[in-house]
Length: 110
Length: 126
Image (cartoon, rainbow over all chains, first blue to last red):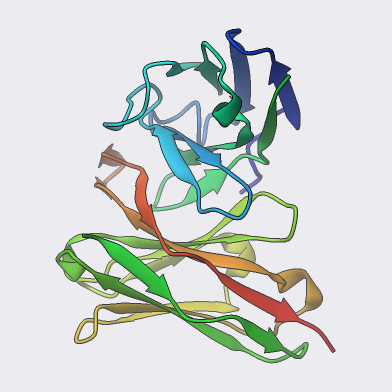
């Protein structure tokens, strides 16, 4: 199972929007609507921001949204804030209880 | 409140094995699947495997097959991850993570990690 492909970095100014992509295959991202996005600040455990492609757990601001087209999922962060600066990882169910993560994207708020 | 408390940092020699524990509290232990995820220094997250605490059944990532064993002790609500034949590339922080929902026959609900352990640093050094 190969890791999902994410851009290593992304950036935006406060108030702007940024979109991070996550590309897999028909065996993971394209085959299931079970893509999640996690935010990780340095030295901390990851925190879920989006699950099942576009659902937000309670407590996650609606500035965070997710979508999917074919084998590529996307996370959009609108109205960028300083605290959004973190690493973001996508993950996807890959069948038979398997899971695969993306390589991670470092989001910088300029 | 839900807590996942992991065992402390370990230093191991190449070729040795390590066993990391993850003690759960604040919920019904057997009702939620537990996963193991690791993160090498400065690197991304890597999925290792999953255990059904109720049945004890496991699934492991292909690259760890034969080297990783995940078990559970329902009497103490603890999940264990043992990794053998350690090499320097296994130096990483190892996390346990609770799956909020479930998957059955390719259908899943609430498929995300809602609680994570604090992480256990395993250092493999000669």
